[in-house]
Image 1 (tube, rainbow, N blue to C red):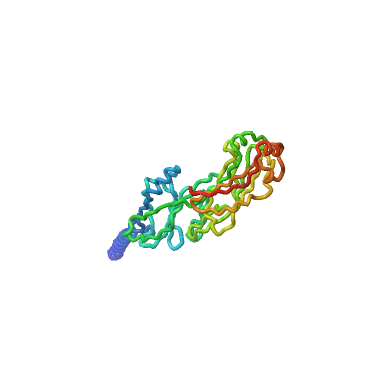
Image 2 (cartoon, helix red, strand yellow):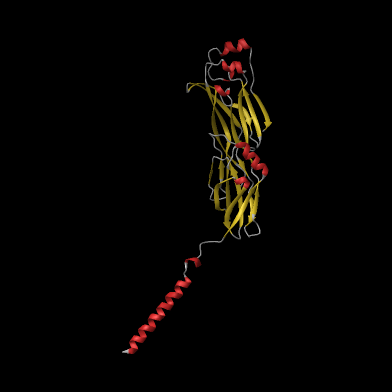
Length: 292
């Protein structure tokens, strides 16, 4: 009878030993938690920080890619230009930063990602060139400089302040700028064009502006002017103004139009002709260019 008992006891000791061995092999701290990472710093240039302070920018987007695939993409507080990001260790990575954008699309791929401006807010957008770096512990910091990525077009009446103050036929304008660079393809530098409508009220002297990514080599921009009173359209230009604008980074094109000159209008306004005769004005469209 002793033999079966001894055998059972030996088996029990063996099972306990195996169980202890398995516990040693599969402790949680020995489990793999995914690829090893490295913390890399991103330092912004002093020029970028000074520009951001002027524009009230408090955060930027950092995007990092491995073989065209996104591994990090997030808006981060400026933190005086010192930012930290965890990235895969031992890889050749590409990165860019963006500030003041409306939104980004297709961020999962560097070859597809597009930065869009906020058409309603009309802010200057800043983007860094795409930079490459190795995450091999020899690189602890990547230096980035974000530069203005847009130009601007501004609409202004040619009439004097007194002439504008005397206007009763309309109280607002919608300015439709065609072929504006509303999107920017980060990898190729190409722009996506679209029409942008901005409002110009009497309080601002019927002046308004739009920002645009560079449209060099693309379709030219014109401006349709729609006159409104109490929210209702009362007139418009016969056709888009032939401004022939090509947007360039950090360049401003100013379009000055005689908004009371009926030769531009689809329908004549009451008293426009008498006002022209009284003030003896007959003006042509004026296009001016300058740097920011």
